[in-house]
Amino acid sequence: LHRLVTQGDYFSEEAMREREPYLHHEYLGRFQDPFGRAMVRPGEKFSETLMRRAEEAVIVEKIRGEQIRRGVDPSEWVGGPVERPMMGQEEEEEEEEEEEEEEEEEGEEEENIGMEENTENLSSTEVVAHDEAGGCPNGTAGPPAGTFKSILSDEEMQDQLEQFTSVMQEKFLSGQDSEHMDYPQIDNDEMLDDHWSREANYDAEDKYFNED
Image (cartoon, rainbow, N blue to C red):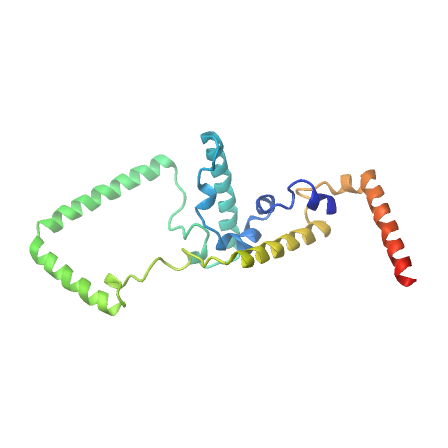
């Protein structure tokens, strides 16, 4: 554990998120900017950006799948609730075109039925809704629940990261990381035996001098 903490990135936030996407979301992800990970990074090639976004989409699907399995309210799903199953790109584009055509036809029909009269009615309706909703026209008070989360302070986010890291380290020590870590190889690592032997000697010396 000491070697993994001090060397490499096994316990970096990104590496831990890849191993436990849902756990990371509960501790940190739901308080972070949902669009930040998809943004282009300085010096990053376009192909690298596309690859990273594809990997991010996989992680988001894992988080959402776990939320569905746990019965999390759809309003709290990462990325927002899904109202229809995933479709192929061509099918989705065709459906969008059909919806646009229907909206255009409906718009033309409405324009032919007393445009001026409808405009006056709409204006009066908006005024009433504005008063009843506390300043928001038509009763809209903001985005739906679950779309935004309050951002924690830097100190609070650091505390969340430390808690998440502690949980991940406990999982490693209890042998629950076998999918990502070769425990038999660790057990047979002679260099680790030497390390623990030195640590044991240091502990014995400290105990001896403390008793004196």
